[in-house]
Image 1 (cartoon, helix red, strand yellow):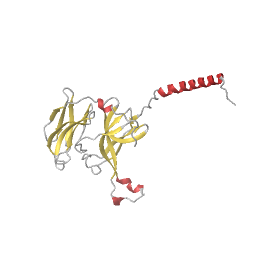
Image 2: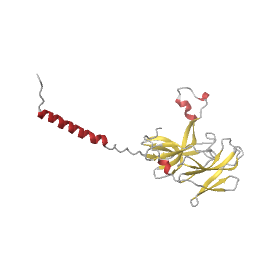
Image 3: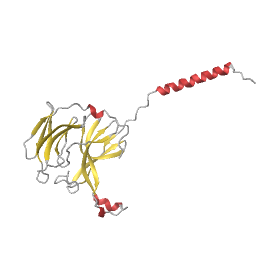
Image 4: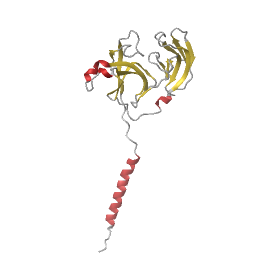
Length: 248
């Protein structure tokens, strides 16, 4: 028996196909939904026990407490910080990390006994962090010749100026590091360095001047030294957007 196609039935199939194709096509070309903005805040400050014994490189002679604040990304603590943040742009800022280090010796603890390590945790000043408020991305900045005991970073725009100590610990340098290009735009030797006999602090806070752009360094026991700084803008700071916020 030969089947015959009904014209009305065939027309119905064609109309249904056109309807389905028309309903799918706009979806394929539609713009993706906007990303949910991240929430980045610094929480309430609290003081923690701190001493030169716990952080030989960073503690001052009379320091007994360290002021810390949690860096909270989307409701979760991503890092602990210390000191004041510096806004690089309206969406990016830098802040110094605070580290909680396990100071226990191998023989001080018993495996599986968490209480035995309670008195062996110490706080230390850590590296500087770059935080993007839009993406929630947190990046540790690798500042050249940065020494926690000698380097006090003074920020201006996306420039960080500080006294750096070389890897051999024999020379003190004036360093200006630019966030936008991730490299130093200035590195000049200031003096010889002897960690045991050098006065503390190694350098007073660096001073900035806007026009012309100039950084003045104040090494202890030496005359102040000024350098003109040549660099671009901070536009490169925000070129690379991360997709996910940093996780603790």
